[in-house]
Image (cartoon, rainbow, N blue to C red; front, side, top):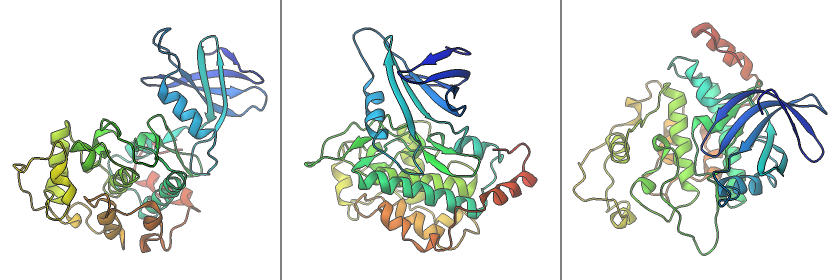
Length: 319
């Protein structure tokens, strides 16, 4: 497929280079020969003849084909031929992880943190209002284009919320961004899992490094406890009934967020406190977060100047 051609029912694409590979497929940078525009072409892998199309791919197609939002990656084309499924997306050549890596562990400028968080929450608010939660938020799934517009991507683990509430697997969300209710074995969770992950990502942008970089589920829990304090069942009543909660957990008092984010921007830590509330019922939803005073002067304009300032502080940052 590399450096070759791919034909869908009514379009042709020329593959330029392989840009990624995951559990379920390979992603290529390609060119739409009809329009000349660059696209991202994901070829879905089939393990054997019996499995059919992976459920993650079907979910992603079903969701994105209905979604139209400036902060969600656009699905242009879908085709199935010769036992291969191809998904054609708008091409965005950087993600937030790449962007932050190029800053060499320096915090992002406050206006960039605010703009990216605002756009991420707008995407989540749109998803949640359509009864969908992403379940796999991490910097690698947050794309940043040349104009510093944010695009939420990779909906393979996304789910819809039904009534009555369904029971879900707890093995979702990349470890560093996984909320405590999932780490403690809860299978009844909802939109709040995305808000916890978004709060972790905002902290990472403000500090230049992941705040909870656990190397196992228990290590992840303990890193959270050390900063936020060990959960108190008298405050978060449901925690005592979670499968992996133990009353014998070490009792950490927690630390103020100022210990992690010195000289924070106004209102930022209050927002993060509410995005990282232990009790999912008390955690902000996306709509509440968007209404927070932290965003009162937020803008998505003029971000090139902010990123340009980073070039003077770091080498090789370019979108």
